[in-house]
Amino acid sequence: MQRTTKGIHRDELVITLDGLQFKTLASQGQRKSLLFALKLASYDYIARVKQVIPILLLDDVFEKLDEDRMINLLGQVTDQAKGQIFITDTHAARLKTAFEKLEKDYQLIELKDTPDG
Image (cartoon, rainbow, N blue to C red; front, side, top):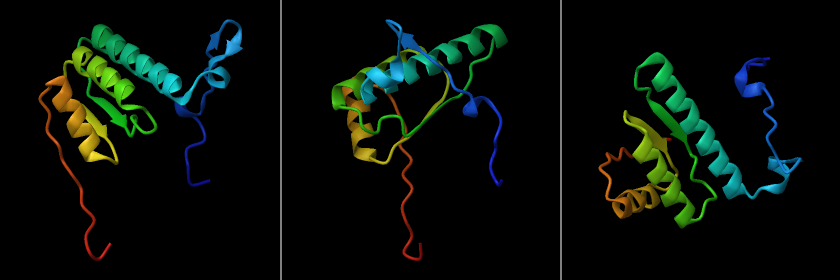
């Protein structure tokens, strides 16, 4: 099949709110916020149980979020996570602006396309 067909990424997690599936009644921003909450909860759990600080990887999580929600979620992540955080984003300027508004230290690594692809 040339892809993984089993594992936690294939499992369906059903979250309900007032008896209705959250994914059907929530906006994209609300779903992303819930994803952040789950990521931070698992990060905290691993840190407590394993007594190590995990690396937090967030891949293109700010896409389709308004600026206020993005800055709020980024603030939550940077306040809670004590180790390294790797965030990918297709808009480097947006991420840079958010870190500056939060007055957080960061290192930006940009990958540029080469002329030959």
